[in-house]
Amino acid sequence: MEYAYKRVGSESFDSTVDAVERSVGRHGFVVHQCHDIHKRLAAKGFPIRPLVIFEVAPEAESPEEAISLLLPVRVNVYEEGGSVTVSALRPSVFAAIFPERGLDELAMEVEKVVVAIVDGAVDQSAT
Image 1 (cartoon, helix red, strand yellow):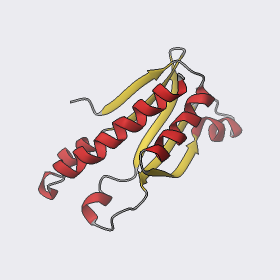
Image 2 (cartoon, helix red, strand yellow; image 1 turned 180 degrees about the vertical axis):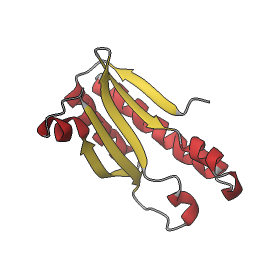
Image 3 (tube, one colour; image 1 turned 30 degrees about the vertical axis):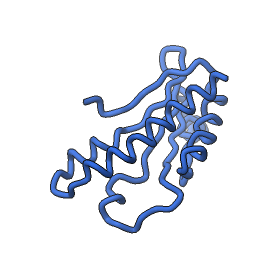
Image 4 (cartoon, helix red, strand yellow; image 1 turned 90 degrees about the horizontal axis):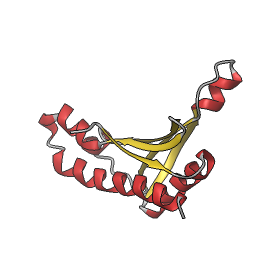
């Protein structure tokens, strides 16, 4: 199993970042944090390629410990090889790390939404 779900887009970096934010909302999740790593490091004299990391979770978070092991999910937007990529860690990876918690079913539900967010962002930025 691949640890991350990735899609390469055809739009600009900024357009893709905007598309991720819209896709998150359309799928019932919210952005809790947005880290513009490129901007922060460039301001300190360490220029890197563009990289924005979103921390996303469902609008109505459950206080249960089990789901807190899976959330927030990080969705990354970065430039690589002249293209813009949107990627996210698969929640099922975390379920495999904590087999005693029985997170498989919950992780797959969250993962379906995460995949839809990434797909929606890439497909939306292309329109």
